Length: 109
Image (tube, rainbow, N blue to C red; front, side):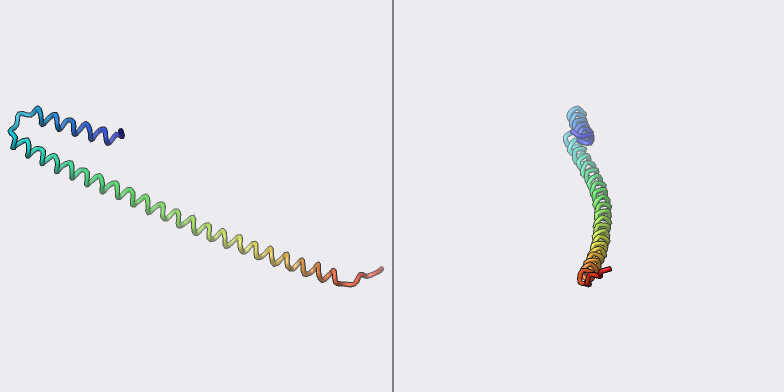
């Protein structure tokens, strides 16, 4: 069990023991149960809100990081594409020069 579950279990157990051992009338006990139920609901609502805020913040941060990584990958792809195009032009130019040189008549000395 997690730490928060252990604390919740201990609180509930203590509350039930207190109800069973308290010298109160049925009406007073029912009112105590209602009040403790309202308190427990308020606490759960607060914890749920806190948890949702943490999750939203984490998701937002993760989204920003992923978007940054996507942009970085796109830029890297653009850079690689530019390099490939440059190398292709250079290879084509060299191939044309070799082809032109091969077409030249052989000069005898």
